[in-house]
Amino acid sequence: TILGQPVMESWERPYMSAMAEAACSAGGRILEVGFGLGISAAAIDSFPDVVEHVIFEANEQVCGQAGLWSDGAARPTTVYQGFWQDLVDDFPAGSFDGILFDCFPLTAADYRDGEVVEFFPVAHRLLRSGGIFAFYFDCGSSWAEAERGFLADTLPMLEKVGFSSVRFSDVFVSPRKDCPYFWKDRFLLPVATK
Image (cartoon, rainbow, N blue to C red; front, side, top):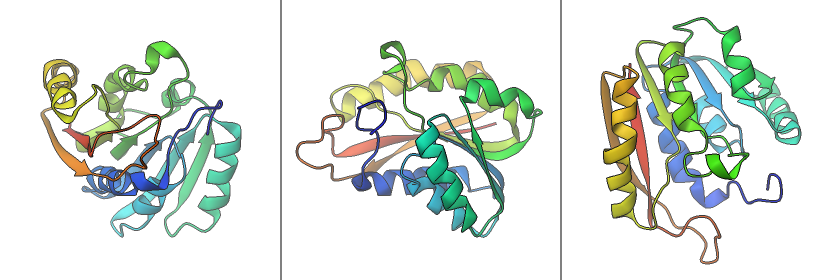
């Protein structure tokens, strides 16, 4: 939990792994925004074409866990503590080949999209040409609502900031019966290419 709220659980492993696979599909230098339980970090670390892994984590306790995890990582890994909004300006345009974004929203206003919409232009700037951006997405009370919301709202925003290709797939999961934050049978996985 973060700030008393459930954030990530082990049943999300298929989704986190699929996000990591998408973000790492071009190999190279990967930025991960939000460490969570380290599920996606471990997946990123497993791809041999990844040459460097950079992690941004705002929560001090979770950042400490990320730092300990990075000590045993197979790939060179650097963990930065802080909010992505405070860290991104330290990186020039085209710094990354892939970005995975999954951070916990800190305000009720950000809860719908977990700050990701604000990150769209930043992701576009930080990616090299052909770079891949994969991010956590959840809206609506059903799969159909999530898909409609993505196509109607999110996809046009990604195109507006300059992503040349946007696709999505579904990733089936089995959340625990009493999970307070997710009750669908699948996640929508957006993948945008610069």
